[in-house]
Amino acid sequence: MEKNNAGSSLQTHELEKGLSIIAFQNNTSENQIFKEETTRDFIQFHFCIKGNLLFIYNDGNYSLPLQDEKALLLFNPEKDLPLNVRLYPNSWLITVLISIKKLHSLFSDEANYIDFLTEENRNKKYYQELSISPAMAVNLSQMLNFNLHDSVKKIYLKGKVYELLALCFNRPEEADVEQCPFLVDEDNVRRIRKAKEIVLQRMAEPPTLQELSEEIGLSLKKLKEGFKEIYGDTVYGFLLDYKMDFARQLLESKKHNVNEVGLKVGYSTSSHFIAAFKKKFGTTPKKYIQSI
Image (cartoon, rainbow, N blue to C red; front, side, top):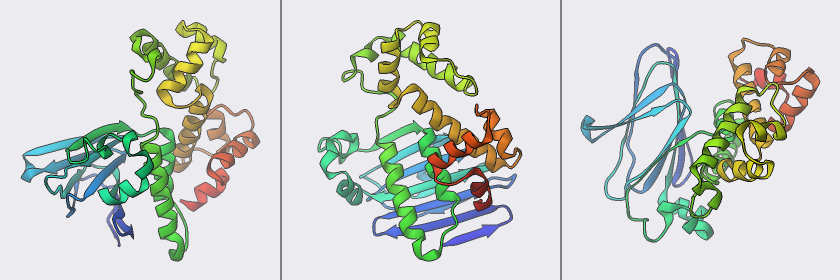
């Protein structure tokens, strides 16, 4: 189903039994309310791609805010949680609804890896807020911006939802300190977070790993190991994902040409930027802009 009116759009896709997605873009200067019935059999994944949202429950007696680049996972086996969402001006939401039965089938061999799928917790309420990683942001953007024939839309979106779930349940950004002795030392964690801030702030001209380790006061070995423990990737792997996602957002704004975007994210020649972008997204920046 697709609906469009005066600056806002709503798309719902039932991909298969027990799995559907909803995309709501409020591009107006006014609040928009979206309501949808759902049952306790479904786990809700909400992704605020931009703007601000408010989830309203229990006839307005309880509400949960969700901010830009944040995601919310909700599950309550004891009562239905019908959707009642307020989208503030210029806010975008993607919601994935998946039945607990379906999710169990996807993660049957790794159920103990996911808290609310364990035998101990499967009948308990579950709530988690997490940050949308650069890889997740790319995935969500691709779910909103694609130009495919109707006959293949469902299989494309189904693949993207599976990818998104895998990214959500990949190593959490805040790793388990019991499993990661390095993280027991809060000072180590603070230094690694500082390293992330430094490379993102200087993404056009990032320091070398040796320079970075000296700046944060950690050995090169601890920097490499600690960064991967916390963020699930190498320093430059994480930075590349961030740069490509940032470049994608700049291209979508249509305020900069390809050369300007490449320079902003640290590529001295447009050919190198185009090659990196194509390797990441499977298309050139120019073709990506044309597909929007």
